[in-house]
Length: 313
Image 1 (cartoon, rainbow, N blue to C red):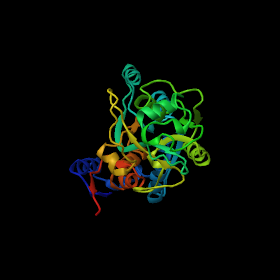
Image 2 (image 1 turned 180 degrees about the vertical axis):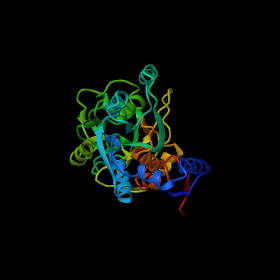
Image 3 (image 1 turned 45 degrees about the vertical axis):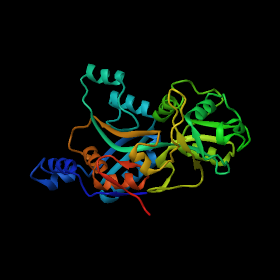
Image 4 (image 1 turned 45 degrees about the horizontal axis):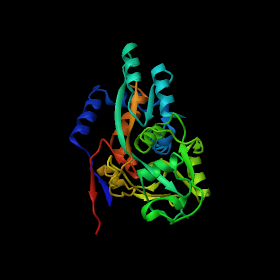
């Protein structure tokens, strides 16, 4: 399966037209939104994607300089609320507490949803296991299953060795999402090793044949729907409240778009910058055709441009 990106939707055309009509002197408006310096906060999980976006934007606009400040989503929201950074790219929406803070201090922010991402559960390529359900994952990360041979069903005795689980660092949205969806908000065991970066996660899983971890789809993608082979993502299946195991679904762009892959999340841009400046220009690039094509080529699903799934025979 592959994706074709349509040129435009009517909604995007209206947004672009409104931007162009901000001033009858388009050259002046274009200039102030493509020159200057800005600091952009980005969740470490999205650094791979956002680095491609900023590099292309600066290639097209030689007088623009975007400095990336990499932190966790929780830290970035704190910076946004405090006014330390005016524009951030994060993996979740505002919490109720953060929303109440904005209302209390009358802080206005804009929100843009610009990509749909997936969390890949990865193992070492030498591991023959091909699929895991949420029950198995939960037991692994809660320390109830400690050896690969003790998995259930088709996985029982398929592989042997003490499991080495790796987790995303605390305060990251990915850590919280995995904990919520897979562990049902139960705690990770203390023996789960914390990786401070996605690069470290890939290195640890690649170098330890008994390892398991989880990571953003964009860090696994070589181009579009082609994944890197330094680690191996497994098929995942949810388990309902009665214990029935659902269909096992591969980590693939098409299944993320269809929302049949069980670990998906949106990527957002939040900004409290309302002036006609570089922040506005870069955000317009992200949600426009060129920025969305980079999303597509990074293995994620564009959010502001329609996509079409084509079944290849």
